[in-house]
Each structure stands twice: as structure tokens, then as C-alpha cells.
Image 1 (cartoon, one colour):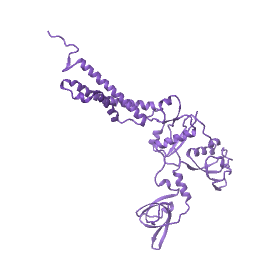
Image 2 (cartoon, one colour; image 1 turned 180 degrees about the vertical axis):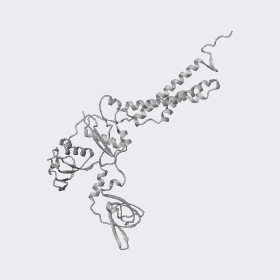
Image 3 (cartoon, helix red, strand yellow; image 1 turned 45 degrees about the horizontal axis):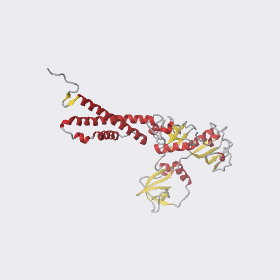
Image 4 (cartoon, helix red, strand yellow; image 1 turned 135 degrees about the horizontal axis):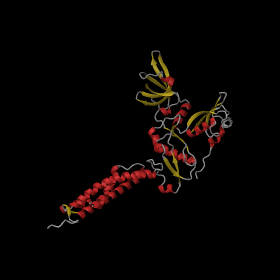
Length: 397
């Protein structure tokens, strides 16, 4: 009579139940180890780069750690009587790869929610989580609705969507002005924003934010009423970008001057000129012209307009209404640069003295950053106190 097989007997050819149990536990344990490695790599990579770790990096590191523990080369070179060791190694590598990927996903999700104060997938590397926990920082959370700055090209909607409700973390004990400069710097450096109009309260809240892009190319350097045209011409050998030239056309009646402009670029017989809009209508793209270089002449208006387009400041004309807190003040009492004023009787004064009064009905042409210009406009309408125009930043405590 045959005895019943015990628990330690063979259930698979050459493998007992206890050996199979140990092999399964070993495979699962190594899979958990690989998942832990993948999660750790994802957290560290997210903390350092503020991006998700590539799939292959986490999986490779997870499998690499397991392979070192298994001494894969020795296990795979065993004899046929130790086939269970090779099978266990192969299964461990497969499970480790799966575990590494799962750990990567879980670690990245944890890091994104743990490091980002607002719950968005963006981190701030300037301070550690411990420093935030003890309250030694100031957090600035951008509003959900981000406006466009008048007079500047709009920012890409995807960039505004990425900025919405983003939180920046900065060291404590800095002034509102310093905090504003740091936020503006982050927006320009990290997101490629050209111009920023932002209001930051003493507690770090942002009630208003507007952004604008910095235009590139030839367009931003053109003064108002000026256009760029490309014509066929024979410029003088000494002509260089920035020179003032006359455009002459040879006709049956002789040479006739068609326009006067500024040379911007040359490429062979093709010349790019900046000319007035009215002069551009007289030029043809099929006619070959002759250029005559003129002595340097003052072009302060064009230089001013081109510099202003690429600067952080902008220019605006603001009328002082009746009942405004600015009515009766002098030019020197304002904290904006006054380029000119138009008095109520229509007289225009360029660069007025600081003692010049500003009665109601005066139009002030000012140069300031977009946020300062917006505050000045509000004060001129009577919507804000004049003191807000020259308010001093206080220290955050």
C-alpha cells in the first residue's frame, strides 16, 4: 500500500513545495525592493529637476540593484540540477522591472503632491520641505486668472495655464519690493515671460497679475508710423545698418528721390529699410533703386521708440480728472518719470520742471513699469489714493 505524499514532496519535477514557496517569497521581496528603488529615484529626480523621471532610468536602476543581489551571472551558469535558481533569477528580474515602473509612478505622484504646495506638478528648489514646515518662508501663489498687459503682445495661453495657481517659495524677512523682483525674475527666467504687471500684498497674496511677451525681430525696433520694406538697391560701400539714406529712382526725367529712411540690413542687392508708412507706398519691389548715404541726423524719436519697446517700462498718456488725488500736485511729487504734460489749454511742455503744478484736466505723459502705470492711472481717475503712487514697501514679518 502506497503512502500519501507529504507537503515536502515534489509538486513540480525536481522542485519541492518548500523550495517553491521560498522562491516565490524571494521573487516578491526583490520586486518590492525594486519598487522602493524606483520610487526613491522618482522622488529625488522630481525634487531636483521639477520633472518626471524618464521610464528607463528608474527601471534600469531597480533591475540593477536586484541583479547585484542575485549575482545573476553565477546563477545563470549553474548546472541542470539547479534550474530552479535560474528560473527564480529570471522571474525576479521580470517582477523587478514591473515593480520599478510601479514604484516610479507612485514616487512621482507622491513627490508632485508633497513638494508642490498648491497640488500642481511644480516644485520650488530654493528651500527644503523642513524649512517650509517651521514657517521660515513666504509663499506666493499666483491667481487663477492672469490678464494681458495693454500695449504688449499676449503670452501663449499654454504658458498662462501653466502659471495659474503656481506657488513660489522665498525666504522670510524680505521687503515687498524685493519679493516682487524675485517673483518677476522667476516668471521671466522660468517661463519666458517678457513683461510682468503684478500686485503683491504684505502677506504674499497676489490680487492681480498680468503678463506680456517680449516681441522679437525687426518689428519691436520700429518707431510708430514706420514700416520695414525690402527693395532692390545698390547701397554705398560705406553704408551700414543705422545709416540714414535717400532712395533715388532713375526715370526718363532723370533721378527722382522716392523716400528717406534708415538702413537696417543688406543681403546682396536686397536692402531692408525703415521708412515712413507714406513713403513705403511709393516704393516698388520690381524697381532697382540707388541709395545715397546722408550725414548723421538726429533721430531721437526713433531711438526712443525702439528702446522703449524692448525695455521693462512703457509709456502712457494719463488725464487727471476732477476730484483726483493727483490734482494740484507738482511733477516732483510723482514717482513716475514724466516725459511731457499737456495743460488744460492745450499747451505741451516737454520734460517739465519738478515744480510744475498739475491741475485737473492735465494730460501727463509718463514712463513707468506696467504696474506703476496702472496705479498712476487709478489715482488719476480718483480710484486710488495719491499716496499709493509713492507707497514704500514694508518688510515682511
